[in-house]
Image 1 (cartoon, rainbow, N blue to C red):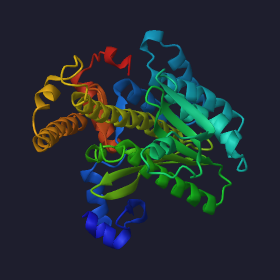
Image 2 (tube, rainbow, N blue to C red):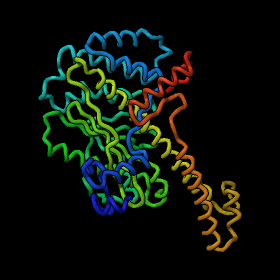
Image 3 (cartoon, rainbow, N blue to C red):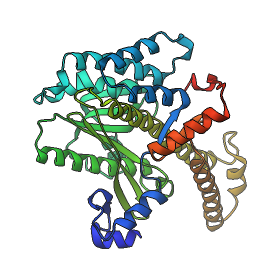
Image 4 (tube, rainbow, N blue to C red):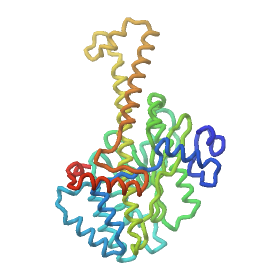
Amino acid sequence: MISKLVADSGTEATIDLGTIDENSPNFSYKKKLMNRYCLKLEFALTMDEHEILTTLAEGKDVDSLISLRDDLFSRPKNTITPNIEYIRTAIHHLITLYEKRHLLYPLHNEAFYQIHVYSHLLDGILLHDPDFRVVRTECNSTVARRLKAIDELDNDSKLRRWDLIYRHLGEQYDLFIGEDKPGSASATDIKKDSKKCDNVRIDMLKAAANGTSMSELVEDLEAITAQTYGLEMTIRGTRKIGDTFVHYTKAKATIPATITSKCTALAEFMLVVISLKRATMLNFIKLQIAWESLSSYHVQFLSNGEDSPDSSPESKSCVNLDSEAVRKYKDLRLKMHLDKAKKDMKEVKVEDHVLVADNLEMLFMLALSKNIDTPTNDKDDEKND
């Protein structure tokens, strides 16, 4: 399948599934690839989040937003999860933008959208974990530094600057990167940003691979970026499948410029953002599993000397073996570590109380069946989600 797409739509190094439309003879291959590797953004909501966004989608005017906002702010504090906090705060801010018709003006600059729109509609969901930071506007990614450390990037290479980075503080790892453009931006500028994001996703996977030590596990990881254009947001991803980097569009969403009969689009935008956060965190958990597996392997074979108390039993037993036997033993242990990591990474999933579906209709059916099965729904599990 990959070889067919490479021959017709890409190169040996990269394929962009976004360039293959319904009229392409390779469209069936694209669909199979998207489904096999679950490349589309899966919608993931708790029952409470689903009920709130359903109420939002049924709204038709600003009064509907005000009513929902007031209800959410009147709820007991111990029932407000970070994601519900995001929803109610975003709605509260949007009410002013809609009442004063700010989003109808077509010539806002990039800073307007960053400060008054996406700081609440996107950044707001990323601010609730003290182990992570949102870095904004003309910022440098840690990806370039990691690539230089493994000789994948020349020291003289110019650093690219980004409009949004979501970074883990302890690992100094960038989970998610974004670029913004105002609605008045030219098609050429938007295309440049898209290419820039495609390149950094490849760099993110190369940095995660850390040369060759983790290359086998990178195929289970994903690099994600967001590109905003005015009120439109496109989520793109990249996976390494075999020797080929595969680009694809995970999701698209639009914030309506006016709220009249368009609350459904607003609810879908928040659904995409909440699901994106969950997908990003699952990807980071997989990355941690990979790091810990390789760290455990390398610690096991640290050369501390035969009598060192820090030497592992396995490394002590290898001291008197010839080098070929040691190499075979190390290869065997590495394979065991990698196999376990692959198994653990494939088992990473959202919490049991989160509904997951690849389309809105299925998500609605899951929520409906959940309500029927558990009419007195206990939401205690959602409080820390």
